Image (cartoon, rainbow, N blue to C red):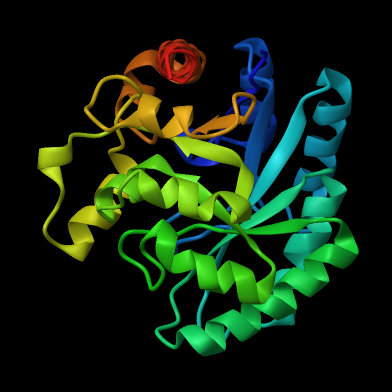
Length: 272
C-alpha cells in the first residue's frame, strides 16, 4: 500500500517557502507543511498572510503540483482570538491545505478548550480541520490528555513522535486516541535516555535537535504499526545536519531514513 511522505517546515526552518516547495518536489516528497506566520520572536519572518510571498507560493504549487497538507502554528493562550486566527485560516484555504496545527499554552484548560471550540467552528467554515498537538512542555502534554479536549471541541489530535516519547506516553495511548487522531503523523527520532530534565532543554530539542528517523531508539515502527497502513507521514526533524548536507541533500537523507522506518512498521503490522 502506498503511503504518502511529506516534509514539515520545521525541518528546514528559515528557508524561503518557494525554495522549500521546490526542494520538496525535487527530492520526491508527496506533500509539505507550511508555516503561515512565525511562531517565535527569534524566527525569521516568512509569513504567508495575504502578501506577495503567498502569491509566489501559490504559483509554484500550481506549477509543480505539490500539495500542502498542513499549516501551522497557533499556541493558544489566554489572549488568542479570532483576530489572530482568521488570517491564518484564510492563508490555509488559499494554499488548499487541509489542516491548521495548534497547541495549548493557556494553563486554564477549560478556557483554552472554549477558545479551541470557536477556532474549530471557524475552521470548518473554511474547510480546514484543526489539529491539536500535545507537546511535552505545554499544557496538554500526553496524547491521552488531549482526548477530552478533542471530544469537547471537535478538533483532531496530532501524534508527534518526539512529544509522544518525551511526555512518557505508552503505546496504549495511540489506540485510546485513535478515534480523534489527525490523518497525518509527525515523525522524528531521539534517544530515550537523553530526555532533558528541564523545560528549556525539551524546547531546545524540539526546535533544533530532533533525531533523524532510525538513528535513535524511539519506538517509531511500533507507533506506526498501530496506525492505518496508509497514514501519511510528515517528517519533522530540525537538526544541524541541514547545514552539513544542504537543503536537497538533507531532505533526501530524511526521506530515505523514514522509508526504512516505514518498512519496519509494515513488517510489524504484517507479523501481527
